Length: 65
Image 1 (cartoon, rainbow, N blue to C red):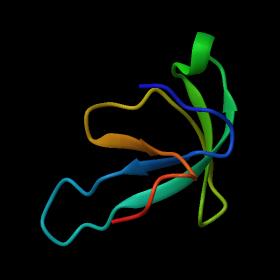
Image 2: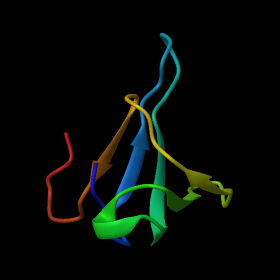
Image 3: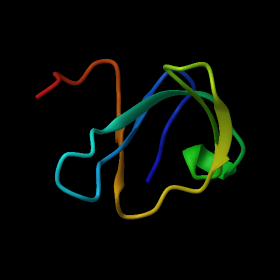
């Protein structure tokens, strides 16, 4: 997984009815775009994350589905 500042981190819901949680990557702390990332979510919460298999990175130039 590689990201740059400004990309979105999408944490997919893991159970039926749970929505995806989307946040903006504000800081990349790993080398060459690797985790961990500092992420600001839409509700204003910030977290330091090392994303697992339930997460994807969405780059601004990619279309949303």
